[in-house]
Length: 124
Image (cartoon, rainbow, N blue to C red; front, side, top):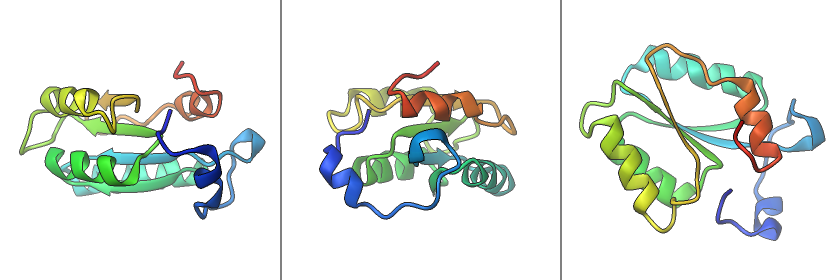
């Protein structure tokens, strides 16, 4: 799902994955609430994901464009740009257009089946 070629992706340092097949997804979490953001980060790291965080919609767009995550998780609490507009901008940007965007309510966890779906290049 990422625009990074397979050879380049293999050279990116990864942590030990708990997902089958040794795949380590790279996830961007955008959440204005610090405790919610940290809770999601801990949950995803425990599941074997590499995690990048953002506090605002603008920061999420910039980081997603530069870091090319496999999944972008947007919390409804984004303050600078509404979550729907942030998601729309991410889906029309040529660099992030193919990256899945998951919008969640505050305090909701990312379902682990989503991470497993990334491994298969499919979001369930």
